[in-house]
Image (cartoon, rainbow, N blue to C red; front, side):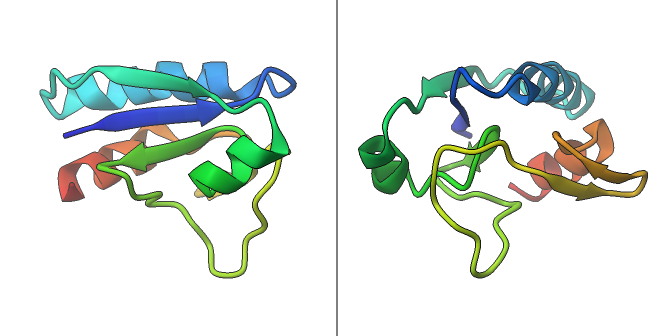
Amino acid sequence: MRVQLLYFDGCPNWRVTEGRLREALEAVGSTANVEKVLVATPEQAEEWGFLGSPSLLIDGEDPFAQPGASVGLSCRLYRTPEGVDGSPTVGQLTEVLLGA
């Protein structure tokens, strides 16, 4: 399984997501490495299909992508059981990893 964490420096939420993602990987018993990808320009955002920071790709697919979401350099929000957050929960990440 290939796991990529896309982010840009202007958004601090990617650090929270990285920690939660590592917890989720441990919970599912995965030894996958998390490749961090800095998206620094609008051109790179287009190239990656970057829906905001942080974005997660599992084997090249964004499991949290919403139809009609805009590509660009912005902070991303996620719907979680606790409300809107700047990162998916460990539980949401675990579900995604188990489905991969």
